[in-house]
Amino acid sequence: MEERIRIAGLGISGLYLYWRLKNDGFDVTGFDIKKEKFYIPCGYATNENIMQKYMSLINIDFEKYVFSRANQITFAGNKFDDRILDPSGLCTFDKNKLEEDGRNSIEISKINRNKGGLIIDATGISRSYLGKSPGDSQYFTLEYLTDSSDHRDFYFYFFEGGRGYFWSFPLGNRYHIGAGSLSKADLDTVRKYIPVRITSRNIRMSPQFSYIQNGNVIGVGEAIGTVSPITGEGIVPSLRSAEILYECIKKYGIEDAGNAYRHRIMDEFGYYYRLSRLVSNIQAGRILNLSNIAAIKYVKKTVNEFGIRLEILSFIRHFI
Image (tube, rainbow, N blue to C red):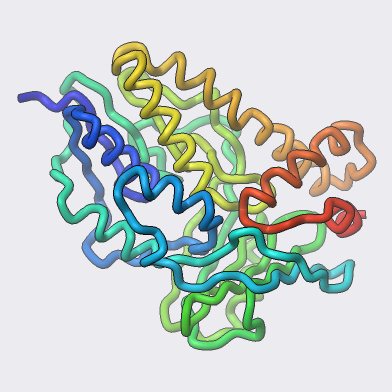
């Protein structure tokens, strides 16, 4: 029997969407080019309160995969003193193991573009099936798994001019050290550490919601830019995008889901465009801009969803 829905990419959003559809009786297969035991480039930090809700819908006990929970979070930068923020669910988790376990019983089938039905592109930064989109903005990253760090708890250091940040997150008995920036020179902040493993990739930092469908291909997750332009966190937003697509397929069927999905993605994530403009304004030195003021409430929203309690004045003073 011909597959009706084929999911390309079994990262967190593809995996979640597969099981939501499969458990609801849809004819669905998955495909992923990653080799077995592939170490995923990712900060592994997310909001466990939200993750628990999503994972429970596909019968995964998220608690089993938690590495470390934040006790306190340090925001630092080259123009302001360290600020200690309180957590509201920030944790790191074993994303590699969770995805490995979730893929164990998935029917894997290579995707033939010429077949009918719906292809869901969950391939992240590559947009392997949707294709490139104009106006894409990507940051360079360098990430190390290390045995030690200068920072025991969650730590962020923001580079001058809003061009990115350095981070150090605990992963149980180890640490994930990384930097994401428009400038490759900023990646040197990571190279002082001794790596157990090195990973590097680009990360999409601009919404691509005008380019979420191409024929019978619909995108989900980082492939369509569900990555916060402020925090760089894409795990929870990508799961939300997958849930929205699931709901649209269930309600409208695979032929008519696309239009409803585009509208709902804009309703849910349209404010990412405001945040993206805010970052661009800061990088260009346009601090005192009316559109920046309008975007402030969304900064608080996206940071809180990451699992960090943010006093908005702390954020403003960093850039002023």
